[in-house]
Length: 265
Image (cartoon, rainbow, N blue to C red):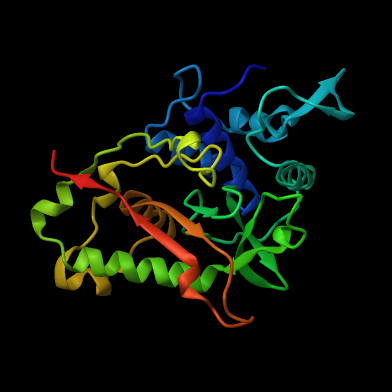
């Protein structure tokens, strides 16, 4: 396997993130197709294709020989996901016949760690929904434990989104992202940039979304998937820095919420 281009690598990372958060293979494939995201061959996504990606050790930078992972050997290409994320996905696949809880994380694919640039994945810590950093820094022993409350962060981001939607006029609903359909940050420009961050946006995400004074009231009528699509349209990335307050106090200042730059078509 050669090195994937940034857009492909980021889609693979998103697939892993969503699967370990509880999304089914079918729902992931359906969403990618609905967003118009092509496979590496330009075809539509299928359940089998998503499953093969989740099963493949090579996306975690692991070498395989005769169908088995070679211990102590890493690939020459950069991994799309960390080994622990791949192992979580593999464990879930082994228990595919068992019912597993379905947690909805509205910010999947948007939340990254400001320290290492790694994706922060929806997880459960002591029964609480959180976004946890999937990366690690050898020089920072406590880094692997970095996480933030999903409920509080989602509430903060949704509030910012609602303020934006309430201030919009009818013509604003037809705006499209300047970076559409792909936004791939240049890793050389910022050492903390995500290794393979990509957000696929489509103006279709705004279909059926009420703007203006009624936006807040109508928001809860949207499905979780539709809310997530709207947030992916409105924001490019949410960087989470270290907490400056003692737990369990939520530190809203940790979140650098970057809005998308929009233009009218």
